[in-house]
Structures are given as C-alpha cells and as structure tokens.
Amino acid sequence: MENDIICLSETWLTSPAKARNAWKNFDTFWVNAIKDKTKGHASGGIVMFVKKTLNAQVLDSSESWLIIHVSRGDYECVIGAVYFHPECNMRATLQGFRDSVEGIQRQFGESPIILAGDYNARVGMPVELPEELVYGTPISARGETTDVKMNPRGALLKECMNDMNFVLMNGRSIDDCPA
Image (tube, rainbow, N blue to C red):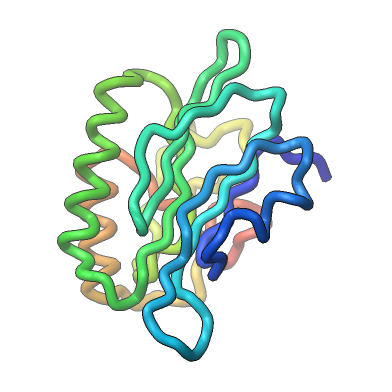
C-alpha cells in the first residue's frame, strides 16, 4: 500500500527524532506528547508524515491538534490530526478547536478539509447522509456502529461538528464498518 499522508494520534512520542528516521521520503510534522509524571508513558502526541512530493505547511497546532495545508499543482486540501485527552475540558478544547478550524475555513474557502483522529468521545449512532453525497465513493450513507451510546463529550463533539458543517465518518467506510 502506498500512502502520501499518514496521520497518527496518541503516539506517546515526546520527541520527533524517534519517528523521523524511518520516513526518509516524508516530511514530518508533530505535536509532542506530554509527560507529566515520572512513571509511565507520556500522554497524547500527534505525528503527520507527508510525502516530500507534496507541499505542506502547518496552519495551526496545539497539544490537541495539528492542522496542515497540503498542495500539489492545482490541488489543495487541509488535513487535521486530532487527539483529545480523555480528561481534557471538552467544552474548552472544542471551542479552541472550532475557532481554529473556522479561521482556516475562512482562509481556504472551498478547499476540502479532513479532520481525523481520536476525540475520546462516544457519539452513538451516525446520522444518515443523502445517497448523492456519497455516490461513487467507498463511503456508506448509513454508518454502522457497535457502540450506540452517546456520552456528554460525544454530544458536544456532534454539536460542534454539525455547527461547522462536518460529518462524522465513524462506521461509514468498508474498513470501519461497524465502527
């Protein structure tokens, strides 16, 4: 399998040097994991590998996300890798995330934006999408999940994504069905 962009969340990496050597044909972007205790591993961490044949630049980052702009020729898109710690203040983290993403939406207009990662939120059943939205893609209009419960973090995440006109893709692809 050949990939141009690889996003990893919850890497536990406190230094990018541990990830760089294996990826010589890729530029590496990262957010260090946070180690706040003397025992155990660090928490969080995000790494994005982008093939050197693509132009990539960081648009925004925090301990919870890394968002880059990627282009090649006339094509451009925005990719975000996310890790929301299970104990983060979800409302405050989502507000900062939303502010960042909405600013990027204003800056890049119609460019596709993909936000992927671990939000540590239970979102329950996916909302059904219009069939014409996914026609001809490997995406299903009706997502499937084995986790039908929604927790308060999931409700906040769904509300935020809906407000920004994003669709949660859990359980919609062949490789993630059921979620």
